[in-house]
Length: 211
Image (cartoon, rainbow, N blue to C red; front, side):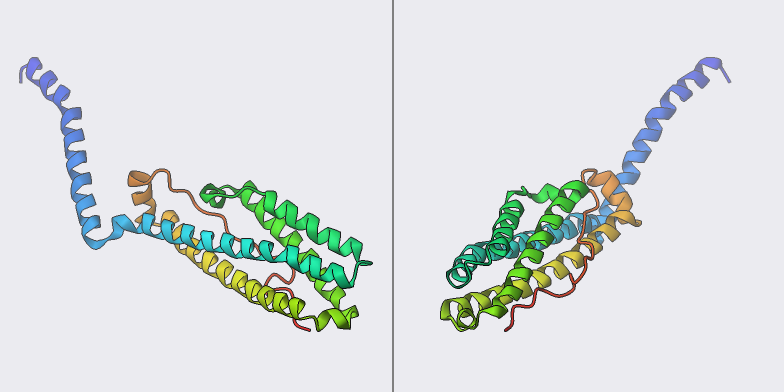
């Protein structure tokens, strides 16, 4: 065989390989799209982000209730200054933590958010225990209304955290296992595993706000 022919064939080989590779990728993508697999990564990602938004909403709802709760308790128990101050400071710290959609894929930011909320939960729990010493406050209608709203919010926080954990588990499993791992690498290279809540003492139940 003439040497020129061999060199010509060799020069065409990389091009042919790229063409065949592209065709294979197109065929594979078409197959995946037909069964919905190619859309599973972004679908699960959006579900997890939606669950994260609900977690933020419920924590914000709690933060909005705290000022009225503190003022109501202060009217009956001004001597509990240290406890009231700790709640106010913990709320300010929790509110100062900036969160967005990117927080869920940033371990440091997510931990900062969780730690701040846990600190607020602890301070709020101590405040509610203090209320036991004041029968008049426990029978105050404004306090009773706030108590009911807070109890409902704490329950919703627990539910939203559970839903978020489940959504993140499904998403993380998809992007870490085959074929989801391949699909993410090829079509969604920006997709990253998300952070989730870690267990803390008594985190499995909301603060006791029943009297």
